[in-house]
Length: 179
Image (cartoon, rainbow, N blue to C red):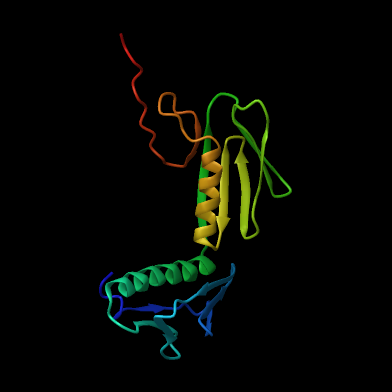
């Protein structure tokens, strides 16, 4: 990340980017995303080939790390409005079920009550089977936070492995205590 001052981001033709008053607007096929730039960063579109360039006003270490964070966030925004991001969750456990009605996810995950969770704007939730949840969004940060909140309702247990987990997540099962 130390040479990001020299690097650029190429913007695809189907993505429209506007930089105005420290606000970056990125619009594509899947939506519109905004990001506020820090005062110590300069971000501009170099030419008509839509190449985005970054500069830090001074070369302090903290500024370079902020430059790397902004670089990664803007690349994720461009990718998100072009292709979108997907997170898949699985419910593992006897009797664990999920249903989606009117942007409300209904989880039956072993509690004495049913857990209802509202899907925020900007995320599309589908339920291909009774134990799978597929979340899609152009905003990577919002999608990751919402998936983490769903997983936190019933995280995988270390002894039995029951709970809500990401697809492909490896849960290490502990051995039980032996006398």
